[in-house]
Image (cartoon, rainbow, N blue to C red; front, top):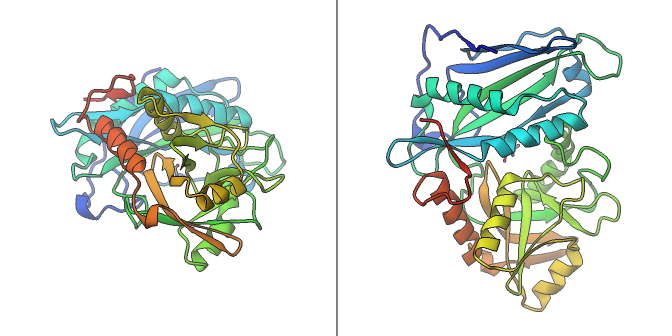
Length: 354
Ligand code: COI
């Protein structure tokens, strides 16, 4: 397939790289491609960033049949632009799509298209420390139809967004609240897919957490409400007595790429790391015994987010005196050093764009 390119006639004023925040500014162009049953994916094109016109009956608006991804491009000190583990994101997108009955994309073709788009938008990749170009590939169901079934037509698009820190706290420890009232997902559902419904399902509890003065929700499993699953829009790690523990992927947890990177780095550094079930009681008793050393979240948007406080029922844990832990800092430094090209990528995670 040949990608057609239509350039924008006027370019937007680019935002100040020191005041980006997260998710507010979008570049001049986007990538689009359509799917039709019997025809497959077709009409790949890079064109000016614009609204998507759709009928009020469009299926995605009613039944949420959609998937998305989040990855980043970084500007290195020498001025190169590089992606972090893009193939893993596109692979995960296809796994999410399968659960949502969305047709697969050609991962190699889409990666090449993404690189083309970034080359056109290269001036939008910010260079302030801690900034990057956040990439949001998305697929939505586009049939104008109200019956409940998988759509026959889809739109795939990629939009780009220069970003700074995801949380207002930046790299400072966040406070999280363990909810007993809400659950995010159950095994056999779509918890492991990156699909809008999972995020919609998180909003009510997130508002509750904010009202109580907490930044994020820590989710327990949807059946017993006993085992830790994930936190807000991140995976979660505990450091107990020198061992790094993260909940194993069980079908209802998002298989995070930063999660996987942290596990790989820990193995490389010969730090004991295990993926297993961990109950909230275990976390609390480790704290009581003075063995809970650190807690941190991982995600593309936030990278590493240290946790300074956890509230569960009427109990409050202060972790590492609310300060950034040694391992949280070490993982943050290692990941960002690889992403910004300050150290050699020995794992093949980096894909240079230009
Ligand atoms: C990410 O970390 O990329 C996410 O998708 C989390 C959130 C911004 C939805």
